[in-house]
Image (cartoon, rainbow, N blue to C red; front, side, top):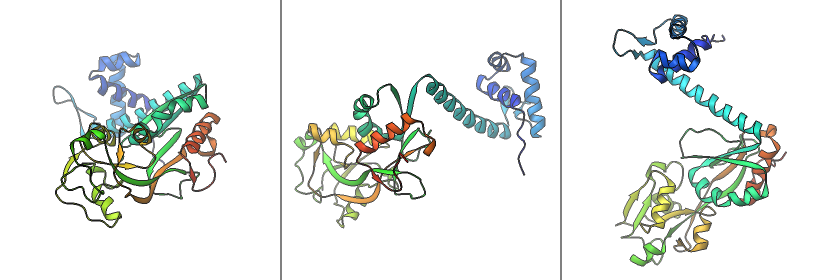
Length: 305
């Protein structure tokens, strides 16, 4: 059975009253009188069959039902605002939003933005960076890290997961470089333990190679890959690097690969269109450029179909 939604005027009045903390502020925002705000909220409560505010307390506070409704409205209005912003920007010109994991955005995409804009002139590129496990707004062009998913139509793989150890010359100047990466005892390993379910960490990296995790290591733990890499560049320890992701640092010598040992898996970075076949031409151009630059390995059909 289809659920009947409450009056939108009541929802907007309640949402505004909570955000402003006063009926006066809500009335000013919605350009109505304060009594009109009170009536709309009262009608909403009558429709729901329960009060949204506990008026027996000063200052007035939301009830449990009010908190639940406000959480839903906040999420819904955030999505509406984001969609409105995208539509308005698109109406003014060629705007393409690209969303992806923070590490990919920081170390692969941003260094190539100049080349992307030269290849597709007249297009404004907007970037949405997300941490793994974080719910975020999908872009017109979406990049994700994970395993292949054949249920995702027209998704292409742009980077595989070959992982190896590296350190900066600053770190190696203060610590004797290990003969091999199996000889890291006494070294500081930079970790992201909270992200183990998403990618290789040190124990899984050694295990994937059939090697034993060395004892006597020290750990520095971070909650983002960007911070971890900044620590590596500052000479704070040895990090794990993904092939193709940090090329600019190896080209300049800011990072040095340690040995030739690496671990690989079927995981990688995957590229797709949010709107599939209905994507705008400029969106397809941006996806095609990223796919070509990343050396895409098509999983299903070509993204331009």
